[in-house]
Amino acid sequence: MKGLSNKLQELSEKGFIRPSSSLWGAPILFVKKKDGSFRMCINYRELIKLTVKNRYPLPRINDLFNQLQGSSVYSKVDLRSVTINLEYEKKIS
Image (cartoon, rainbow, N blue to C red):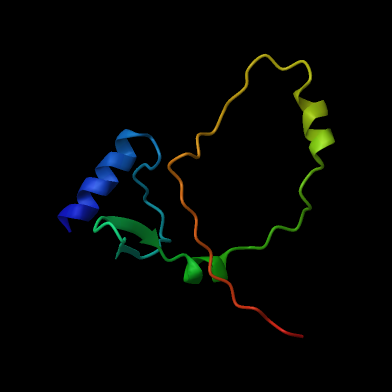
């Protein structure tokens, strides 16, 4: 439990997470890595089942760049410390 508290504190200080009062959540677990340290993993499978599917296609990259023309403020997302592992079930129709 101390490891979880430390990790949550670290992520909060970096601004990656914040407290939430949402009724929805997902279980957290730690997986031991080869070097003996632990990776925090979140199981979103049940939450994903409840999520409304996106009904709109993603915009084309050219359209996005056109929307940026004339803007004076931009932002950047730092994904260096992000690891995403996805499991999927192959369905054969």
